[in-house]
Length: 409
Ligand SMILES: *Cc1c(COP(=O)(O)O)cnc(C)c1O
Image (cartoon, rainbow, N blue to C red):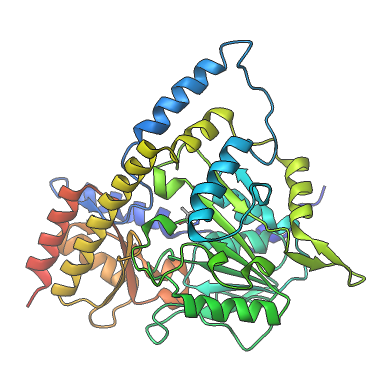
């Protein structure tokens, strides 16, 4: 048999393995060094108790003939889809019906799987730097073209820089599928209403679809930053929104998220006929997916109880407190910083224009702090590093004390 050649085109992803290797090397050479991990991209607090209790009950349901659950609906149980519509959308004044919500085993799967419903010829636009899944999953599907100078020939790159505050702006070229992430990983910045409106207008004018990755929406604190793209007029005609319980409720190891595909969203077939994307996604899911686990969906439902909401809020506030401390301390230490107010991520500029990996080495060797080199998220990330608020408050405080004592003039 012949393989999907696109896998051979994909370069190895060295970012996290190289970070880990350099850390290992440094610790071996300096066994007494107390390295603090500020590169963590995973949550560290346990699951909110409301979800734990609900999952215990759901396990017991599985033990009784009368409450046992086998295959569930591919789209997700109505109890969870109703809770999402009522709690994540209705309070925003956004009209999303529960049959427009598709529960999944996480945002990453959906981001990749959505490639099944759009043409292989689609022109994909991605932010640089950005979450690597957008690029790699589309390359696997055959939408990348060829790779030269670390850029795929068929992609439209949306450069993010200090000039645009690391927020991508609509390009002059046409794109069919646009991946937007707000609040963004890795830069931590989020679109205002006006900035997002420009994207919705672009998508409507180009018959394009925005795939809106809103994995960090729970971290938004600024009232001018929309929690959902559907708060922008016209978005129901051009946007798919993807959310996850991973970064909001610590579900990274449990696996649950959802994707919203409105009834009012259409694409075109070969003959130019309008086709409902929701219908295609439903068909895709019913064919290739058998639903997320009943137990996990009961856990996710409990996050919307009064107790659950309070516990989720407390976890998010904990990480945001760390992020604020990082942002303020790094500024005080003389760094230019972005993000950290609507996001657990802080994007830090090299003070003297050093490349990302050089600043990584300085942080590791001088203050025993690990970070993620920005260049690993795309060429436009060169000269930056990413710090995260996912460590403990105590470790974050100690890390910031070190930065201040070493870098502050
Ligand atoms: C962590 C992350 C996800 C993945 O979420 P899962 O639901 O755990 O698959 C998606 N998008 C971004 C930007 C992320 O940082």
